[in-house]
Length: 495
Image (cartoon, helix red, strand yellow):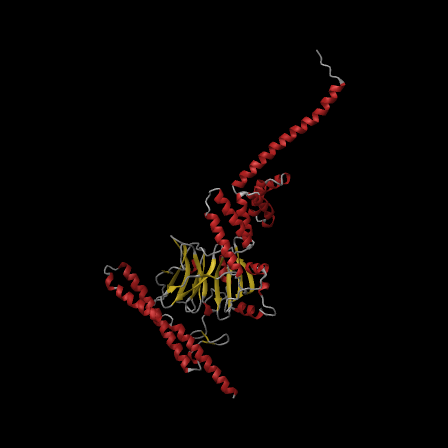
C-alpha cells in the first residue's frame, strides 16, 4: 500500500525542515557553549589563565552582563599582565558583590600605586569576608600593606637618579664602580669558594679586615653575618648580627658606611612593601646594640624587590638594584646622588609623586640645568668593584670633597696629625681586642672550666665598649683641626 501526500502537506514539511535543523543546531551550540565554559572554569581553577582567557572572552561577548564571567575574565586578564584591560571587568564584578573581585581589584590598584583606591577595595573585601564568616587574616594583611604604602607615597623622597642600567641578575654587583675607600662587593659563592647557589653578596671594608654578608640558616632563611680578620690573616668566627637587624624573615645584602656604624641592608620583614626592601640602622656605640632599622622609603623601595644599596662617600654617589618591571633573570641598577638630609616631595601633585615613586623616568628627578656628565665620566673611570685596588699611600683619609690625605706628611697641622695617629692606634687596639675576644669565646664553648674564661671575656667586652666611638671622634676632630689650619694659612697668604 502506498501513501499519497498532497501538495499542501509537502509544503508544510518543507517549511518545518529548516526550522527543525535550526532548533537542533541551537540546542547543540548551547551544549557546546556549556562544555566550553565548564572547560574554562577548570582551567581557571588550575591557574591556567592564559588558556582559559580566550574561552571567557568569547562567552562574555555573548553575555556581557554576567557577573561571574566578568570576574573570571577580569582575573585572567590580570594574571596574564593586562592590568588596564582587567579593571573594567573586575569593577563590574565588584559592583555585583563577587567576593574575589574586591581582592583582585585592590591588587590591581596596589600595583598601580593607587593605594587609597586599593584600600577601599581591601576594606570591602574584609567586610564581605566577615559577612560570610570567613577567615579575614589575608584581607587584614593587605590593608596593612596598602596603608604602609600610602604613607610612603605621601613621603616620597626627591632623589637625583642620574643613570640606570639593566643587567643580569646573577652578576649585578660587578657593575657597582665603588672607589677603593668605599670597600668592595663580591659574589658569596666565589668569595668563599663554594659550589652552593646562595643569592647573596659579601661586603669587604676598605682595610680588608672585616666582611659582612647574608648566609642561609636553617631557621630564618638568610641572616646577616660578620667576620673579622685574625692576626694570622685568616677569617675569624662567624658572628650573626643580633636583633633587631636579623629577624625571622630574610635579611641580606649588607653595606657598611665608612663610619663603621651605619648599616644598610635588605629585608623581607613585616615593614617591607613587597619582597626585599632596603633598611638602614646604626650601631649604638655606648651599648654595642643596633638601633631599630628604618625603611628608607620610596623611591628606593617599591612593591617589588629592592636591595643592595651602597654609597661611595668619596664620590658622593650611590647604587641600588630593583627587579621592578624586569624579566625574571634581569635587574635594573640605579645610580643616584645621596641627599645630605631627606628631601620630601611636597608639590601636591599626586600623579607626579606616583611617577617619582615608581621611577617612571629618571629625568623627572634631575635638577634643572644640572650637568651630570662629569660625575658619570668619573665613575666610568673607576675599575670594577670586585677588583683589588691598593691606594698609593699608607691610608686614605678624606679631609673634604677635594682633599684626601694618604700619608702623615700630608698633614699641615701637627695637632691634626697627632689626633689622627691616636685614632689609628685605638683602631688597632680595637681590632686586637676583638680578635682576642673571638678566640676566648671559641675556647669558652668547649672549655670544661668556664669560670676561668668568663671574667676575661667580660673584662674585654667592657674595655671594647670604652673604645668604640673614639676613633671616629678623634678623626672628626683631626679633620676639623686640619681644615681650620688650612683656612688660617690661606687667610694669612691673602694678607
